[in-house]
Image 1 (tube, rainbow, N blue to C red):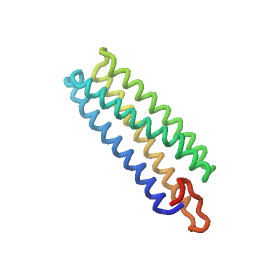
Image 2: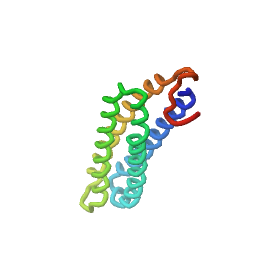
Image 3: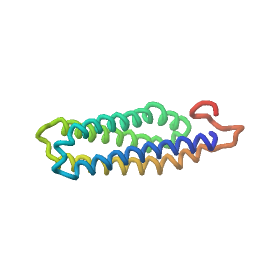
Length: 155
């Protein structure tokens, strides 16, 4: 695999993670205000549906396309990929619970803030582990042009 393809995938992974982290930070700031949380619920609901869709799409793409291709090249990553898949499931549950709370008129700003903090902690740990473990794997795929294995098609 060519170095520029490895760099491009790694860069995109980091860019997506940073955009999602910023969006979550903005939502936390809105909820933290407390007295504004009830009036912000429609805005937070819209944010959550957009954010949840983006994060879900990102993880589904990894699970269905990137991880299988990576495992084909580096089967020794199976425990890492399994862990990342489980973390995707945990994040999906946390996001679904947050969506339900946003739709519940009885949910308090404090409850929403706790939930979004849980999402932030899980997301930060997941992104850190994923970037760290996959960065090494992507660099391990570098090989001379003559015997490279292409993961994402011709370069």
